[in-house]
Image 1: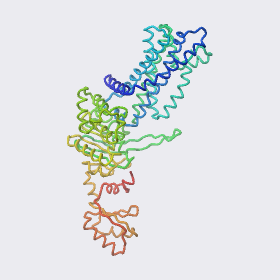
Image 2 (image 1 turned 30 degrees about the vertical axis):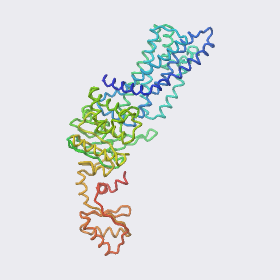
Image 3 (image 1 turned 60 degrees about the vertical axis):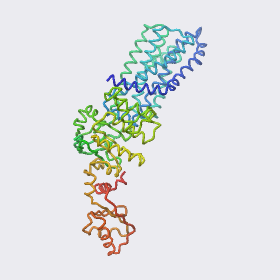
Image 4 (image 1 turned 90 degrees about the horizontal axis):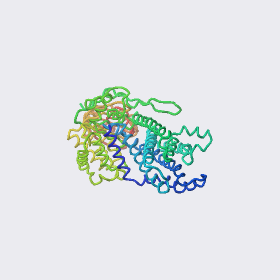
Length: 249
Length: 319
Protein backbone atom coordinates (compact mmCIF):
# COMPACT_ATOMS: atom_id res chain seq x y z
CA UNK A 1 0.00 0.00 0.00
CA UNK A 2 2.72 2.43 1.02
CA UNK A 3 4.79 1.23 -1.92
CA UNK A 4 1.99 2.06 -4.36
CA UNK A 5 1.44 5.47 -2.77
CA UNK A 6 5.15 6.22 -3.08
CA UNK A 7 5.19 5.02 -6.71
CA UNK A 8 2.36 7.41 -7.57
CA UNK A 9 4.06 10.18 -5.58
CA UNK A 10 7.32 9.62 -7.44
CA UNK A 11 5.54 9.64 -10.81
CA UNK A 12 3.66 12.86 -9.99
CA UNK A 13 6.75 14.63 -8.69
CA UNK A 14 8.55 13.79 -11.92
CA UNK A 15 5.65 15.32 -13.86
CA UNK A 16 5.86 18.41 -11.69
CA UNK A 17 9.63 18.72 -12.13
CA UNK A 18 9.18 18.54 -15.88
CA UNK A 19 7.32 21.87 -15.66
CA UNK A 20 8.63 23.66 -12.57
CA UNK A 21 7.63 26.99 -14.10
CA UNK A 22 4.01 26.55 -13.01
CA UNK A 23 4.96 26.08 -9.39
CA UNK A 24 6.93 29.33 -9.63
CA UNK A 25 3.91 31.08 -11.12
CA UNK A 26 1.94 29.92 -8.10
CA UNK A 27 3.93 32.14 -5.73
CA UNK A 28 3.89 35.27 -7.88
CA UNK A 29 0.64 36.42 -6.29
CA UNK A 30 1.79 36.23 -2.63
CA UNK A 31 5.17 37.66 -3.60
CA UNK A 32 3.49 40.67 -5.17
CA UNK A 33 1.37 41.14 -2.08
CA UNK A 34 4.46 41.04 0.12
CA UNK A 35 6.34 43.56 -1.99
CA UNK A 36 3.56 45.95 -3.00
CA UNK A 37 0.94 45.57 -0.30
CA UNK A 38 2.84 45.03 2.96
CA UNK A 39 4.52 48.49 2.82
CA UNK A 40 1.09 50.01 2.30
CA UNK A 41 -0.25 48.12 5.28
CA UNK A 42 2.55 49.50 7.42
CA UNK A 43 1.31 53.07 7.02
CA UNK A 44 -2.15 52.11 8.27
CA UNK A 45 -0.95 50.37 11.43
CA UNK A 46 -0.29 52.96 14.12
CA UNK A 47 3.35 52.85 15.15
CA UNK A 48 3.80 49.69 13.09
CA UNK A 49 7.25 48.73 11.92
CA UNK A 50 7.93 46.43 8.97
CA UNK A 51 8.82 43.47 11.17
CA UNK A 52 5.44 43.54 12.93
CA UNK A 53 3.54 44.08 9.71
CA UNK A 54 5.30 41.13 8.07
CA UNK A 55 4.68 38.88 11.08
CA UNK A 56 0.98 39.69 10.74
CA UNK A 57 0.74 39.61 6.96
CA UNK A 58 3.12 36.82 5.80
CA UNK A 59 1.01 33.88 7.11
CA UNK A 60 -1.95 35.25 5.15
CA UNK A 61 0.13 35.64 2.01
CA UNK A 62 1.32 32.05 2.38
CA UNK A 63 -2.20 30.70 2.77
CA UNK A 64 -2.97 32.40 -0.51
CA UNK A 65 -0.82 29.79 -2.30
CA UNK A 66 -2.93 27.06 -0.75
CA UNK A 67 -6.15 28.81 -1.76
CA UNK A 68 -5.20 29.60 -5.32
CA UNK A 69 -2.83 26.67 -5.88
CA UNK A 70 -3.71 23.52 -3.96
CA UNK A 71 -7.46 24.08 -4.32
CA UNK A 72 -7.00 23.73 -8.08
CA UNK A 73 -4.90 20.57 -7.80
CA UNK A 74 -7.82 18.37 -8.81
CA UNK A 75 -8.10 19.92 -12.25
CA UNK A 76 -5.70 17.48 -13.84
CA UNK A 77 -7.72 14.59 -12.48
CA UNK A 78 -10.92 15.67 -14.21
CA UNK A 79 -9.28 14.94 -17.52
CA UNK A 80 -8.07 11.60 -16.18
CA UNK A 81 -11.68 10.55 -15.57
CA UNK A 82 -12.18 10.86 -19.32
CA UNK A 83 -8.92 9.84 -20.97
CA UNK A 84 -9.02 6.37 -19.48
CA UNK A 85 -6.09 6.76 -17.06
CA UNK A 86 -8.22 6.30 -13.93
CA UNK A 87 -10.21 3.56 -15.64
CA UNK A 88 -6.98 1.69 -16.36
CA UNK A 89 -5.66 2.19 -12.82
CA UNK A 90 -8.97 1.07 -11.33
CA UNK A 91 -8.65 -2.37 -12.95
CA UNK A 92 -4.93 -2.68 -12.22
CA UNK A 93 -3.53 -4.19 -9.02
CA UNK A 94 -2.82 -0.62 -7.80
CA UNK A 95 -4.00 0.20 -4.28
CA UNK A 96 -6.78 2.66 -5.10
CA UNK A 97 -6.38 5.14 -2.21
CA UNK A 98 -2.75 5.45 -3.30
CA UNK A 99 -3.89 7.08 -6.53
CA UNK A 100 -5.24 10.06 -4.56
CA UNK A 101 -2.74 9.87 -1.69
CA UNK A 102 0.30 9.95 -3.96
CA UNK A 103 -1.05 13.07 -5.66
CA UNK A 104 -1.94 14.78 -2.38
CA UNK A 105 1.59 14.11 -1.12
CA UNK A 106 2.97 15.72 -4.25
CA UNK A 107 0.78 18.79 -3.70
CA UNK A 108 1.89 19.01 -0.06
CA UNK A 109 5.54 18.95 -1.07
CA UNK A 110 4.92 21.54 -3.79
CA UNK A 111 3.14 23.80 -1.31
CA UNK A 112 5.90 23.47 1.31
CA UNK A 113 8.54 24.38 -1.28
CA UNK A 114 6.51 27.37 -2.42
CA UNK A 115 5.90 28.42 1.18
CA UNK A 116 9.62 28.21 1.91
CA UNK A 117 10.36 30.58 -0.97
CA UNK A 118 7.75 33.06 0.23
CA UNK A 119 9.07 32.92 3.81
CA UNK A 120 12.64 33.44 2.61
CA UNK A 121 11.49 36.54 0.75
CA UNK A 122 9.70 37.80 3.87
CA UNK A 123 12.92 37.27 5.84
CA UNK A 124 14.77 39.35 3.26
CA UNK A 125 12.16 42.07 3.66
CA UNK A 126 12.69 42.18 7.40
CA UNK A 127 10.67 39.39 9.01
CA UNK A 128 12.35 37.94 12.09
CA UNK A 129 11.25 34.47 13.26
CA UNK A 130 12.92 31.58 15.10
CA UNK A 131 13.92 28.32 13.44
CA UNK A 132 11.24 26.26 15.30
CA UNK A 133 8.60 28.77 14.20
CA UNK A 134 9.86 28.50 10.62
CA UNK A 135 9.68 24.69 10.69
CA UNK A 136 6.29 24.57 12.42
CA UNK A 137 4.95 27.01 9.82
CA UNK A 138 6.07 24.63 7.08
CA UNK A 139 4.27 21.76 8.84
CA UNK A 140 1.18 23.93 9.09
CA UNK A 141 1.41 24.61 5.35
CA UNK A 142 1.72 20.86 4.71
CA UNK A 143 -1.46 20.24 6.72
CA UNK A 144 -3.26 23.05 4.87
CA UNK A 145 -2.09 21.64 1.55
CA UNK A 146 -3.29 18.17 2.49
CA UNK A 147 -6.76 19.56 3.23
CA UNK A 148 -6.99 21.88 0.22
CA UNK A 149 -5.68 19.29 -2.27
CA UNK A 150 -7.91 16.49 -0.93
CA UNK A 151 -10.90 18.81 -1.16
CA UNK A 152 -9.94 19.64 -4.72
CA UNK A 153 -9.60 15.97 -5.75
CA UNK A 154 -12.90 15.23 -4.05
CA UNK A 155 -14.60 18.01 -6.00
CA UNK A 156 -12.93 16.93 -9.23
CA UNK A 157 -14.00 13.30 -8.87
CA UNK A 158 -17.52 14.15 -7.73
CA UNK A 159 -18.25 16.80 -10.36
CA UNK A 160 -15.98 15.70 -13.23
CA UNK A 161 -16.41 18.93 -15.12
CA UNK A 162 -13.77 21.66 -15.44
CA UNK A 163 -16.32 24.45 -15.69
CA UNK A 164 -18.22 23.27 -12.63
CA UNK A 165 -15.15 22.81 -10.43
CA UNK A 166 -13.61 26.14 -11.41
CA UNK A 167 -16.89 27.97 -10.73
CA UNK A 168 -17.23 26.37 -7.31
CA UNK A 169 -13.63 27.02 -6.31
CA UNK A 170 -13.80 30.63 -7.53
CA UNK A 171 -17.10 31.10 -5.73
CA UNK A 172 -15.62 30.03 -2.41
CA UNK A 173 -12.15 31.52 -2.81
CA UNK A 174 -13.10 35.17 -2.14
CA UNK A 175 -15.24 34.67 1.01
CA UNK A 176 -12.63 32.22 2.33
CA UNK A 177 -9.92 34.83 1.72
CA UNK A 178 -11.80 37.67 3.40
CA UNK A 179 -13.12 35.62 6.31
CA UNK A 180 -9.72 34.11 7.07
CA UNK A 181 -8.37 37.57 7.75
CA UNK A 182 -5.78 37.01 5.09
CA UNK A 183 -5.02 40.75 4.80
CA UNK A 184 -6.03 42.07 8.22
CA UNK A 185 -6.79 40.07 11.37
CA UNK A 186 -10.48 39.30 11.74
CA UNK A 187 -10.45 40.39 15.39
CA UNK A 188 -10.22 43.99 14.16
CA UNK A 189 -13.72 43.54 12.80
CA UNK A 190 -17.16 43.50 14.45
CA UNK A 191 -18.36 40.55 16.51
CA UNK A 192 -20.59 39.06 13.81
CA UNK A 193 -17.69 38.95 11.37
CA UNK A 194 -15.57 37.15 13.93
CA UNK A 195 -18.37 34.64 14.47
CA UNK A 196 -18.75 33.92 10.77
CA UNK A 197 -14.98 33.54 10.40
CA UNK A 198 -15.01 30.71 12.93
CA UNK A 199 -16.67 28.53 10.28
CA UNK A 200 -13.75 29.00 7.93
CA UNK A 201 -11.00 26.39 8.39
CA UNK A 202 -8.50 28.74 6.81
CA UNK A 203 -9.13 31.29 9.56
CA UNK A 204 -7.60 28.90 12.10
CA UNK A 205 -4.61 28.24 9.86
CA UNK A 206 -3.94 31.97 9.47
CA UNK A 207 -4.40 32.62 13.19
CA UNK A 208 -2.01 29.77 14.05
CA UNK A 209 0.51 31.16 11.52
CA UNK A 210 0.35 34.57 13.19
CA UNK A 211 0.89 33.01 16.62
CA UNK A 212 3.95 31.18 15.29
CA UNK A 213 5.34 34.33 13.69
CA UNK A 214 4.84 36.24 16.95
CA UNK A 215 7.01 33.58 18.56
CA UNK A 216 4.06 32.30 20.60
CA UNK A 217 4.59 28.63 19.77
CA UNK A 218 2.50 27.34 22.66
CA UNK A 219 -0.59 29.37 21.75
CA UNK A 220 -3.82 27.37 21.67
CA UNK A 221 -4.48 28.43 18.07
CA UNK A 222 -1.60 26.18 16.94
CA UNK A 223 -2.86 22.76 18.10
CA UNK A 224 -6.44 23.77 17.16
CA UNK A 225 -5.37 24.55 13.58
CA UNK A 226 -3.35 21.35 13.21
CA UNK A 227 -6.14 19.22 14.65
CA UNK A 228 -8.82 20.82 12.54
CA UNK A 229 -6.85 20.65 9.29
CA UNK A 230 -5.90 17.01 9.82
CA UNK A 231 -9.48 15.98 10.61
CA UNK A 232 -10.82 17.89 7.61
CA UNK A 233 -8.11 16.40 5.39
CA UNK A 234 -9.06 12.91 6.57
CA UNK A 235 -12.72 13.58 5.73
CA UNK A 236 -12.05 15.03 2.28
CA UNK A 237 -9.52 12.29 1.51
CA UNK A 238 -12.09 9.62 2.35
CA UNK A 239 -14.63 11.45 0.24
CA UNK A 240 -12.35 11.66 -2.79
CA UNK A 241 -11.47 7.97 -2.50
CA UNK A 242 -15.17 7.11 -2.33
CA UNK A 243 -15.78 9.18 -5.44
CA UNK A 244 -12.97 7.31 -7.13
CA UNK A 245 -14.69 4.05 -6.32
CA UNK A 246 -18.01 5.23 -7.70
CA UNK A 247 -16.35 6.28 -10.93
CA UNK A 248 -17.50 3.09 -12.59
CA UNK A 249 -21.09 2.99 -11.41
CA UNK B 1 -11.74 -21.41 -20.31
CA UNK B 2 -10.37 -17.94 -19.59
CA UNK B 3 -13.75 -16.16 -19.47
CA UNK B 4 -17.01 -17.67 -18.36
CA UNK B 5 -20.03 -15.41 -17.92
CA UNK B 6 -23.59 -16.33 -17.05
CA UNK B 7 -26.54 -14.04 -17.58
CA UNK B 8 -24.59 -10.82 -16.97
CA UNK B 9 -26.81 -7.80 -16.62
CA UNK B 10 -26.16 -4.14 -15.95
CA UNK B 11 -28.79 -1.52 -15.32
CA UNK B 12 -27.73 2.09 -14.88
CA UNK B 13 -29.81 4.70 -13.16
CA UNK B 14 -29.60 7.75 -15.39
CA UNK B 15 -30.53 11.18 -14.10
CA UNK B 16 -33.14 12.93 -16.16
CA UNK B 17 -33.24 16.25 -14.32
CA UNK B 18 -35.43 17.45 -11.43
CA UNK B 19 -34.82 14.34 -9.42
CA UNK B 20 -36.32 12.13 -12.10
CA UNK B 21 -34.41 9.01 -12.91
CA UNK B 22 -34.61 6.47 -15.64
CA UNK B 23 -33.43 2.88 -15.64
CA UNK B 24 -31.20 2.10 -18.60
CA UNK B 25 -30.61 -1.57 -19.27
CA UNK B 26 -27.19 -1.51 -20.91
CA UNK B 27 -26.60 -5.26 -20.78
CA UNK B 28 -29.55 -7.62 -20.66
CA UNK B 29 -28.35 -11.12 -20.01
CA UNK B 30 -25.07 -12.10 -21.67
CA UNK B 31 -23.46 -15.54 -21.59
CA UNK B 32 -19.87 -15.87 -22.75
CA UNK B 33 -17.35 -18.67 -22.98
CA UNK B 34 -13.91 -17.67 -24.19
CA UNK B 35 -11.27 -20.36 -24.59
CA UNK B 36 -7.71 -19.81 -23.44
CA UNK B 37 -5.52 -18.63 -26.29
CA UNK B 38 -8.18 -17.43 -28.70
CA UNK B 39 -9.03 -14.04 -30.09
CA UNK B 40 -12.65 -13.48 -29.25
CA UNK B 41 -14.62 -10.53 -30.59
CA UNK B 42 -17.78 -8.80 -29.46
CA UNK B 43 -19.20 -7.17 -32.58
CA UNK B 44 -22.06 -4.72 -32.46
CA UNK B 45 -23.15 -1.16 -33.08
CA UNK B 46 -22.30 1.71 -30.72
CA UNK B 47 -24.45 1.52 -27.62
CA UNK B 48 -25.02 -2.22 -27.92
CA UNK B 49 -23.50 -2.87 -24.49
CA UNK B 50 -20.07 -4.09 -25.59
CA UNK B 51 -18.08 -1.66 -23.46
CA UNK B 52 -20.26 -2.25 -20.39
CA UNK B 53 -19.77 -5.99 -20.81
CA UNK B 54 -16.00 -5.63 -21.02
CA UNK B 55 -15.98 -3.26 -18.04
CA UNK B 56 -17.85 -5.82 -15.96
CA UNK B 57 -15.44 -8.58 -16.96
CA UNK B 58 -12.46 -6.32 -16.20
CA UNK B 59 -13.85 -5.55 -12.69
CA UNK B 60 -14.36 -1.86 -13.45
CA UNK B 61 -18.15 -2.05 -13.21
CA UNK B 62 -20.04 -4.30 -10.82
CA UNK B 63 -22.76 -6.36 -12.59
CA UNK B 64 -26.36 -5.74 -11.51
CA UNK B 65 -26.89 -9.48 -11.65
CA UNK B 66 -25.36 -12.60 -13.10
CA UNK B 67 -21.87 -13.94 -12.55
CA UNK B 68 -18.59 -14.14 -14.38
CA UNK B 69 -15.25 -15.82 -13.90
CA UNK B 70 -12.13 -14.41 -15.50
CA UNK B 71 -8.94 -16.49 -15.38
CA UNK B 72 -10.72 -18.70 -12.88
CA UNK B 73 -11.65 -15.90 -10.44
CA UNK B 74 -15.02 -14.34 -9.73
CA UNK B 75 -15.13 -10.75 -11.02
CA UNK B 76 -16.90 -9.46 -7.91
CA UNK B 77 -15.68 -11.47 -4.92
CA UNK B 78 -12.15 -12.04 -6.25
CA UNK B 79 -11.69 -8.80 -8.18
CA UNK B 80 -8.13 -8.32 -6.90
CA UNK B 81 -7.12 -11.71 -8.32
CA UNK B 82 -8.76 -10.91 -11.65
CA UNK B 83 -6.85 -7.61 -11.81
CA UNK B 84 -3.56 -9.46 -11.51
CA UNK B 85 -4.45 -11.56 -14.55
CA UNK B 86 -5.64 -9.01 -17.05
CA UNK B 87 -4.46 -6.20 -19.25
CA UNK B 88 -7.07 -3.61 -20.10
CA UNK B 89 -6.95 -1.12 -22.95
CA UNK B 90 -10.01 1.09 -22.80
CA UNK B 91 -11.58 2.90 -25.70
CA UNK B 92 -10.06 6.17 -24.44
CA UNK B 93 -6.62 4.54 -24.32
CA UNK B 94 -5.60 5.58 -20.84
CA UNK B 95 -2.25 7.07 -21.78
CA UNK B 96 -1.26 9.99 -19.53
CA UNK B 97 -0.82 12.97 -21.88
CA UNK B 98 1.46 14.89 -19.54
CA UNK B 99 4.11 12.22 -19.14
CA UNK B 100 6.36 10.29 -21.51
CA UNK B 101 4.94 6.91 -22.48
CA UNK B 102 7.97 5.24 -20.94
CA UNK B 103 7.07 6.62 -17.48
CA UNK B 104 3.55 5.20 -17.75
CA UNK B 105 4.98 1.82 -18.77
CA UNK B 106 7.39 1.70 -15.85
CA UNK B 107 4.79 2.88 -13.32
CA UNK B 108 2.31 0.22 -14.48
CA UNK B 109 4.93 -2.51 -14.29
CA UNK B 110 6.08 -1.44 -10.83
CA UNK B 111 2.50 -1.25 -9.51
CA UNK B 112 2.19 -4.89 -10.52
CA UNK B 113 5.15 -5.72 -8.32
CA UNK B 114 8.19 -5.55 -10.61
CA UNK B 115 11.42 -4.00 -9.41
CA UNK B 116 12.67 -0.89 -11.20
CA UNK B 117 15.22 -3.01 -13.06
CA UNK B 118 12.64 -5.58 -14.19
CA UNK B 119 10.22 -2.82 -15.14
CA UNK B 120 12.84 -1.07 -17.28
CA UNK B 121 13.78 -4.31 -19.02
CA UNK B 122 10.15 -5.16 -19.76
CA UNK B 123 9.45 -1.62 -20.98
CA UNK B 124 12.44 -1.82 -23.34
CA UNK B 125 11.13 -5.09 -24.74
CA UNK B 126 7.74 -3.57 -25.51
CA UNK B 127 9.21 -0.35 -26.91
CA UNK B 128 11.13 -2.47 -29.40
CA UNK B 129 8.12 -4.65 -30.25
CA UNK B 130 5.91 -1.67 -30.95
CA UNK B 131 8.67 0.48 -32.55
CA UNK B 132 8.31 3.12 -29.87
CA UNK B 133 11.94 3.38 -28.70
CA UNK B 134 12.58 6.70 -30.49
CA UNK B 135 9.59 8.41 -28.91
CA UNK B 136 9.73 6.76 -25.49
CA UNK B 137 10.71 9.98 -23.72
CA UNK B 138 8.35 12.34 -25.48
CA UNK B 139 5.30 13.58 -23.63
CA UNK B 140 2.35 11.54 -24.86
CA UNK B 141 0.38 14.61 -25.91
CA UNK B 142 2.87 15.26 -28.70
CA UNK B 143 2.31 11.81 -30.25
CA UNK B 144 0.07 10.86 -33.15
CA UNK B 145 -3.10 8.82 -32.67
CA UNK B 146 -1.43 5.65 -33.92
CA UNK B 147 1.62 6.11 -31.69
CA UNK B 148 -0.56 6.71 -28.67
CA UNK B 149 -2.61 3.59 -29.45
CA UNK B 150 0.59 1.57 -29.57
CA UNK B 151 1.59 2.95 -26.18
CA UNK B 152 -1.88 2.12 -24.83
CA UNK B 153 -1.44 -1.46 -26.04
CA UNK B 154 2.09 -1.67 -24.64
CA UNK B 155 0.87 -0.43 -21.22
CA UNK B 156 -1.87 -3.07 -21.31
CA UNK B 157 0.71 -5.78 -21.95
CA UNK B 158 3.51 -4.66 -19.67
CA UNK B 159 2.58 -7.10 -16.90
CA UNK B 160 2.47 -10.06 -19.35
CA UNK B 161 -1.19 -10.78 -18.58
CA UNK B 162 -2.68 -14.09 -19.80
CA UNK B 163 -5.74 -12.14 -20.98
CA UNK B 164 -6.10 -8.70 -22.55
CA UNK B 165 -9.25 -6.70 -23.11
CA UNK B 166 -9.14 -4.38 -26.10
CA UNK B 167 -12.13 -2.05 -26.27
CA UNK B 168 -12.51 -0.69 -29.80
CA UNK B 169 -8.76 -0.92 -30.37
CA UNK B 170 -8.67 0.53 -33.88
CA UNK B 171 -11.31 3.26 -33.74
CA UNK B 172 -9.84 6.41 -35.23
CA UNK B 173 -6.80 4.72 -36.74
CA UNK B 174 -5.85 5.00 -40.41
CA UNK B 175 -5.82 1.78 -42.50
CA UNK B 176 -2.05 1.36 -42.22
CA UNK B 177 -2.08 1.62 -38.41
CA UNK B 178 -5.10 -0.65 -38.23
CA UNK B 179 -3.37 -3.37 -40.21
CA UNK B 180 -0.28 -3.05 -38.00
CA UNK B 181 -2.37 -3.35 -34.87
CA UNK B 182 -4.10 -6.44 -36.24
CA UNK B 183 -0.68 -8.00 -36.74
CA UNK B 184 0.25 -7.21 -33.15
CA UNK B 185 -2.95 -8.78 -31.86
CA UNK B 186 -2.29 -11.94 -33.91
CA UNK B 187 1.22 -12.08 -32.47
CA UNK B 188 -0.29 -12.00 -28.99
CA UNK B 189 -2.34 -15.06 -29.78
CA UNK B 190 0.74 -16.80 -31.16
CA UNK B 191 2.43 -16.21 -27.80
CA UNK B 192 -0.53 -17.77 -26.00
CA UNK B 193 -2.28 -14.62 -24.77
CA UNK B 194 -6.07 -14.68 -24.86
CA UNK B 195 -7.72 -11.58 -26.33
CA UNK B 196 -11.22 -10.24 -25.93
CA UNK B 197 -11.82 -7.31 -28.24
CA UNK B 198 -14.86 -5.26 -29.06
CA UNK B 199 -15.41 -3.64 -32.40
CA UNK B 200 -18.09 -2.18 -34.60
CA UNK B 201 -16.03 -2.91 -37.70
CA UNK B 202 -17.24 -6.00 -39.54
CA UNK B 203 -14.00 -6.50 -41.42
CA UNK B 204 -12.05 -6.32 -38.18
CA UNK B 205 -14.05 -9.08 -36.52
CA UNK B 206 -13.93 -11.10 -39.74
CA UNK B 207 -10.19 -10.76 -40.28
CA UNK B 208 -8.98 -11.01 -36.73
CA UNK B 209 -11.04 -13.19 -34.45
CA UNK B 210 -11.31 -16.93 -33.98
CA UNK B 211 -14.81 -16.70 -32.60
CA UNK B 212 -17.24 -13.88 -32.01
CA UNK B 213 -20.55 -12.88 -30.59
CA UNK B 214 -22.79 -10.32 -32.20
CA UNK B 215 -24.31 -8.04 -29.59
CA UNK B 216 -27.31 -5.81 -30.15
CA UNK B 217 -29.38 -3.99 -27.53
CA UNK B 218 -27.54 -5.60 -24.66
CA UNK B 219 -28.08 -9.15 -25.85
CA UNK B 220 -26.17 -11.71 -27.86
CA UNK B 221 -27.92 -12.34 -31.14
CA UNK B 222 -25.43 -14.75 -32.73
CA UNK B 223 -22.31 -16.65 -31.78
CA UNK B 224 -19.75 -18.73 -33.67
CA UNK B 225 -16.69 -18.51 -35.89
CA UNK B 226 -16.89 -15.92 -38.67
CA UNK B 227 -17.12 -18.80 -41.17
CA UNK B 228 -19.94 -20.57 -39.37
CA UNK B 229 -21.96 -17.41 -38.99
CA UNK B 230 -21.64 -16.49 -42.64
CA UNK B 231 -22.51 -20.00 -43.74
CA UNK B 232 -25.64 -19.76 -41.66
CA UNK B 233 -26.76 -16.90 -43.89
CA UNK B 234 -25.60 -18.45 -47.19
CA UNK B 235 -22.36 -18.09 -49.10
CA UNK B 236 -23.27 -15.34 -51.49
CA UNK B 237 -25.55 -12.39 -51.66
CA UNK B 238 -27.01 -10.78 -54.77
CA UNK B 239 -28.12 -7.19 -54.34
CA UNK B 240 -30.65 -5.91 -56.88
CA UNK B 241 -32.23 -2.57 -57.57
CA UNK B 242 -35.32 -2.51 -59.75
CA UNK B 243 -38.81 -1.13 -60.22
CA UNK B 244 -41.61 -3.26 -58.87
CA UNK B 245 -39.51 -4.79 -56.16
CA UNK B 246 -42.54 -6.32 -54.39
CA UNK B 247 -43.28 -8.49 -57.39
CA UNK B 248 -39.60 -9.30 -57.81
CA UNK B 249 -39.40 -10.30 -54.16
CA UNK B 250 -42.16 -12.86 -54.71
CA UNK B 251 -40.49 -14.15 -57.86
CA UNK B 252 -37.16 -14.60 -56.14
CA UNK B 253 -38.69 -16.20 -53.07
CA UNK B 254 -40.19 -18.82 -55.35
CA UNK B 255 -36.79 -19.84 -56.70
CA UNK B 256 -35.62 -23.07 -55.04
CA UNK B 257 -31.88 -22.17 -55.11
CA UNK B 258 -32.45 -18.91 -53.19
CA UNK B 259 -32.43 -19.40 -49.41
CA UNK B 260 -33.73 -16.04 -48.32
CA UNK B 261 -34.79 -12.68 -49.72
CA UNK B 262 -34.71 -9.42 -47.78
CA UNK B 263 -35.98 -6.02 -48.85
CA UNK B 264 -34.12 -3.02 -47.51
CA UNK B 265 -34.21 0.63 -48.58
CA UNK B 266 -35.53 -0.15 -52.05
CA UNK B 267 -32.89 -2.83 -52.49
CA UNK B 268 -33.45 -6.56 -52.61
CA UNK B 269 -30.88 -8.87 -51.12
CA UNK B 270 -31.09 -12.51 -52.20
CA UNK B 271 -29.02 -15.05 -50.26
CA UNK B 272 -27.85 -18.16 -52.06
CA UNK B 273 -25.03 -20.64 -51.72
CA UNK B 274 -23.71 -20.63 -55.26
CA UNK B 275 -23.97 -17.12 -56.65
CA UNK B 276 -22.03 -17.77 -59.86
CA UNK B 277 -24.58 -20.30 -61.08
CA UNK B 278 -27.61 -18.76 -59.41
CA UNK B 279 -27.17 -15.32 -60.98
CA UNK B 280 -28.03 -16.29 -64.62
CA UNK B 281 -31.07 -18.23 -63.38
CA UNK B 282 -32.25 -15.24 -61.37
CA UNK B 283 -31.86 -12.96 -64.37
CA UNK B 284 -33.93 -15.32 -66.53
CA UNK B 285 -36.68 -15.56 -63.93
CA UNK B 286 -36.91 -11.77 -63.67
CA UNK B 287 -36.84 -11.42 -67.49
CA UNK B 288 -39.83 -13.74 -67.88
CA UNK B 289 -41.90 -11.38 -65.74
CA UNK B 290 -40.59 -8.34 -67.65
CA UNK B 291 -38.97 -6.87 -64.57
CA UNK B 292 -36.24 -4.46 -65.56
CA UNK B 293 -33.14 -4.23 -63.43
CA UNK B 294 -31.46 -0.93 -62.60
CA UNK B 295 -28.43 -2.55 -61.06
CA UNK B 296 -27.23 -5.87 -59.75
CA UNK B 297 -24.18 -7.05 -57.83
CA UNK B 298 -22.86 -10.33 -56.51
CA UNK B 299 -20.86 -10.42 -53.27
CA UNK B 300 -19.69 -12.89 -50.68
CA UNK B 301 -21.89 -12.75 -47.59
CA UNK B 302 -20.30 -10.70 -44.79
CA UNK B 303 -20.91 -10.47 -41.07
CA UNK B 304 -23.16 -7.53 -41.89
CA UNK B 305 -25.52 -9.99 -43.56
CA UNK B 306 -25.43 -12.04 -40.38
CA UNK B 307 -26.23 -8.94 -38.36
CA UNK B 308 -29.02 -8.03 -40.78
CA UNK B 309 -30.50 -11.49 -40.50
CA UNK B 310 -30.62 -11.40 -36.72
CA UNK B 311 -31.58 -7.79 -36.08
CA UNK B 312 -33.46 -6.79 -39.19
CA UNK B 313 -31.13 -3.87 -39.85
CA UNK B 314 -27.69 -3.35 -41.25
CA UNK B 315 -24.79 -2.71 -38.90
CA UNK B 316 -23.75 0.16 -41.16
CA UNK B 317 -27.02 1.90 -40.35
CA UNK B 318 -27.02 0.92 -36.70
CA UNK B 319 -23.50 2.10 -35.95
